[in-house]
Length: 499
Ligand SMILES: *[C@@H]1O[C@H](CO)[C@@H](O)[C@H](O)[C@H]1NC(C)=O
Ligand SMILES: *[C@@H]1O[C@H](CO)[C@@H](O)[C@H](O)[C@H]1NC(C)=O
Ligand SMILES: *[C@@H]1O[C@H](CO)[C@@H](O)[C@H](O)[C@H]1NC(C)=O
Ligand SMILES: *[C@@H]1O[C@H](CO)[C@@H](O)[C@H](O)[C@H]1NC(C)=O
Image 1: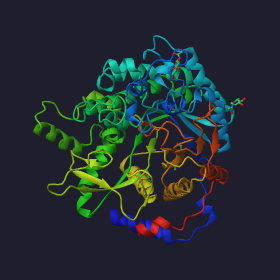
Image 2: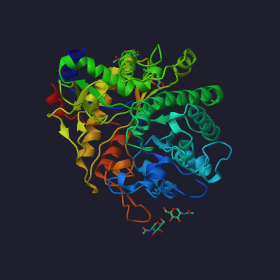
Image 3: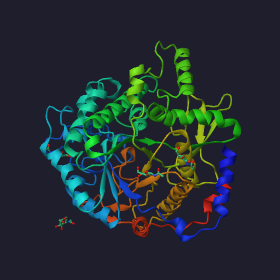
Image 4: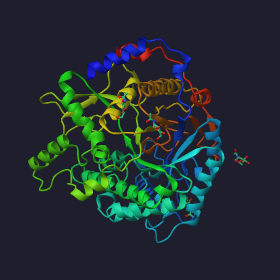
């Protein structure tokens, strides 16, 4: 399988290019993405409730690289007109943003809907549509109301109903205009991050809380999907999915194929198999491995909380497209006897007994977990297309970090060129990728990376009260691509390493 795909790719590389072949289809949607806590600021404006990120970083500024937080961020709560203008400058067809749960429902519950919160998102949606830009709305991007956290948050099974109630309010307000929805962004960030001392609520509970959360986010997503299906789908024909953080993984040697398959089940399958597979439920090999492990560790309950048959049916098939957040590729190998597995979930798994690392041939970035391997995106799109029954794939995040606040961001420009080329090649292969969202529209509050870590097409001056936004070289490149709907082939600088 692996060797076959290598051969196929090298044939494409040696083939001749024609300008016609390099064009994105006319219906292809270019976009950029953001998230409420990372850009909105106005953390205590009007009647907004407190989120778990507000609370965590007010209590523990030391967790963030530069001791900052999202209190003001890009001030998009006030600067949203400029955000729309930037989408227009970039020639975007789509803008992905998220709704802040505690801004819309200050108590977390629909007993009270904030008028100012409601209007903020109405203005943003209407402003985008006036410019012909489709809103792609994420209902939840990490900012749980703190009050719901106090009631157990994502580890409490009731959270699935709380989320359904919140989503129902969101649909009732915006479903008439929003056609592309994401229920939840990166469940892995919520559960593996939130219960693995990486993101709010910053618990250290990788054996129990992490997996209770895992099941509950799937149920929450499914209940929101079903409500839309029942109440709004016939009328508005919108599409719903959830966005999955999915690095691509390759075995270091052919002997590492089995642990690489398990790694894919651990990363992606835990949040996708129940939704996209024919049989539903947990990925079977991983379920056995984790539950055997829990038994060995003396736990009375399985690591992966079982689904009832009704729950399997509830969750199965709750997607209209696949939403992929892709950043990088990692090599995987089994640990040697006596060797310690990777400690952080980006570096390996103590449960599977693996280490993840980068091929020394791949170009590096400012993040040690992040190497450049554009071909990985195409290989992954092939894997997704052949593993699930997908009618449509939208890339909902793709981008590269830097530390340089300046406007000349050559590595980012080349990243977009090289990764978009792989998207185009996948489309030419016959995979229905219909959209691509750059992460991210502008520099913002990058969670534990604070304002030091930059991912923006636009630079933001965080010392200026207006949070002035200025396009980088990569933004000029991106708008040239959206205008011509073409990219020039790279003639395979990194591809040659691979072949
Ligand atoms: C909102 O928070 C800021 C600090 O970020 C504080 O200076 C301001 O007084 C607060 N406003 C209200 C209305 O509480
Ligand atoms: C790709 O997806 C779009 C949007 O759902 C759909 O209109 C189109 O028919 C699909 N194309 C193929 C080849 O399946
Ligand atoms: C992608 O999946 C569709 C539907 O299963 C299939 O018809 C198509 O041949 C696949 N494309 C590739 C390149 O494998
Ligand atoms: C901030 O924006 C306002 C409105 O666009 C403008 O009048 C003002 O000069 C700006 N201030 C700074 C410091 O750039």
